[in-house]
Length: 555
Image (cartoon, rainbow, N blue to C red):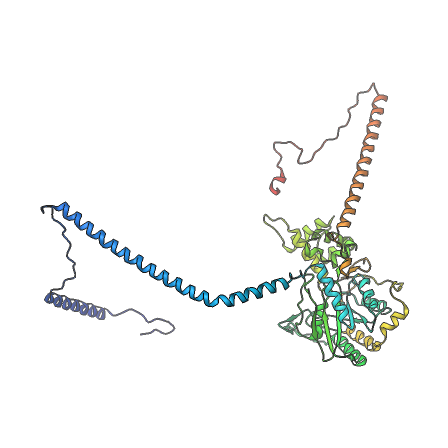
């Protein structure tokens, strides 16, 4: 009987039933034995007695039997070998027949392969600077409107004079539009000042891209508690602001110009400014790959947002090695490629910030240098290696990811006295602003600034910008050697000169001190004086039996 809530039935039986079964089995076996006895069949196999010892010529009989057994085995082995040979011959005949049939087709295939191999070229390296520059120039040539994406935390540092000059020199009806992205990470006052400052050159659109695009659609985080008031913190979630304004602006411009086909809009800028995120936010789905790592986009990609408007995603502008180290740490691909150490990049960034603001932002005590900051930061986040040693490299990569990604809030002050760059004039500015609905841009920027929740001035880190970052657009501008080689050589020469000057100064000081000591000894010959000798009390030189050397555990 099958028990409830159990897979198998129970094997337990009553004693009467078990004994009955055993009795029937015994009777059945007895019956089988009786029938076998009548038939004369027995289970036991009779043992071969062999040749008895009393038999005459026993040894000869055994020898003959052994020879007979060996002959039988040899005959069996010959049969096996003959069968194997027959099978091998059959296989050979089948292979020859198949090869004769396939010979003409194989010859044709070889000829085709030889022709295609001569025509084929090696695939270009997509991560090389030559390829990235070529792709960027393709985007500029193909586009009717060029959107330069700027990070609102450092808009001046994200501008590339070579890029803007190249767009203006192409001539025709090419327009340049500035998009100020990541405005939710900057105080409201600084965003307004930057918009006023940049509007004097090109039209500016404030933008906040969506950061939660998953599985092709925008998904907002579910909230357990709904706010009672209408003002909600939607800027931190999936909501994006400025996308409607920018899309309507491009569609209206396409209707005005009446270009054949669709209006091509190229989205350009330095790595990690949010080019692909802006395209995804306007499209409303995950059309382009997005990542925290720099240089995620390698090739140009076209995305349709309307019938008459087409956006073109582009790889990031390659920063020139002649830029200052702070701007290279934020916008260069050297850190990702291994050309510059992560620790050096963090050291250059910390120089441009206020120490107290960094301490408050990361909740870290006072530090003397960048290495001490990274050790404290690693301990705080739990980045520890074997033996409890802090992993400074992992801490440095997370620190850089905070600064380049859409996480950390820092800002740069807008210049009070604005002046046009050398490649711009009043006529060019008016020409670039023609065709755009400037009133619509102003109203759209006001709406986005009202909707976005901005951080406080006190919670945002102050950062000193190093000015516009120069970029490499053509293959001819790329240096042949490794990037930053000239800068490193200059730094090495400066270090050598400084070390030489320091050694000469130290030697002069030592000579002066020795002369002064000799004069004092000569003046006072009568009195016995003990001359002080400098003693080295470092852990490495101290020779004590009882002292414990703490350096042994960390070798």
